[in-house]
Length: 155
Length: 155
DNA sequence: ACCCTTAATGAGAATGGTTCTGATTACTGA
DNA sequence: TCAGTAATCAGAACCATTCTCATTAAGGGT
Ligand SMILES: [Mn+2]
Ligand SMILES: [Mn+2]
Ligand SMILES: [Zn+2]
Ligand SMILES: [Zn+2]
Image 1 (cartoon, chains in turn brown, red, yellow, cyan):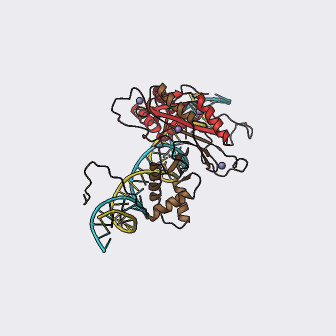
Image 2 (cartoon, rainbow over the protein chains, first blue to last red):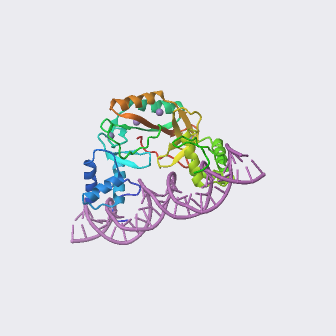
Image 3 (cartoon, chains in turn brown, red, purple, orange):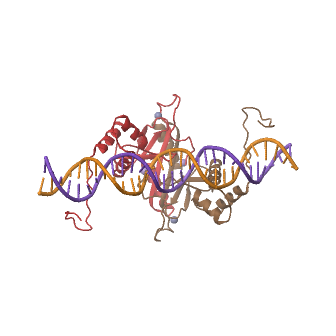
């Protein structure tokens, strides 16, 4: 224990230090409009000449996700994608399988459906996972190069 | 090439051979009511004295998933869970975070919402991923032991 | 029952995203 | 300036899943 006089059991709001790496990460994320993986962001930082460890990128992103500063979606392949929030409100996404472009979706309909359906079965603490995938208008017609989400049937 | 007289380019319906391993897997899955992971099923098979390789279990399960004979859900931790279908129709699940019990949900509401929402944004080939998680009535009150899905906020 | 083609199996290696480790660095308030 | 400790990072570890490929064994044809 140090010279701190914080009493036992008392919550201490962690002080986030602004490091060069964190600043670089925030910049990169701000400059990025669409969903990107931790690895992609790490690569981007390297290309910018910023030396940031991969673990640091992962840590930074999950912190941002925790504070709600970035949204996350999981690809079918188990990779996590991140992008900065347009809103802090609860919402879902419509992601383009080809280019990663994503629309923020606010669905009162599903919210209501999820809640009532869960309750109808006697379940409590109901949470829901909802993501829409598709091909955006811009990507339609152009030969698709790399697809993020397999064209698997709905689940 | 062999003595087969199948013409080039002609589709051949793959013949699924009923092996001891496959039979054991089907048995295990039939005896299992709730969602289980490939590893859990493999362990179950071992306990039954059946020698089945892990890779075989994985292959078997993904085949069954492909033919629609089993449903799958992904846990937040990137693990796939399987269970036999009650229906072959498209549907979703309400899964208990504690015991894995799952209710089959048929949601015309979300189906409609997903389609119209996607189209409204000019997206095509829309698919959706919808899963509900909660705590079932039976598990409520009893000290939870191992939780499958982190109590993360909705996504 | 025997053959033959080839689907299926399985031990172990490989994959790949993510997390952990432990020593080192560098914010920041005082 | 300095102590305290948050943060970093290279690399190892994790872990579910997939791949390799030599070996086994369905099962239709005979
Ligand atoms: Mn929602
Ligand atoms: Mn559906
Ligand atoms: Zn697109
Ligand atoms: Zn339960």
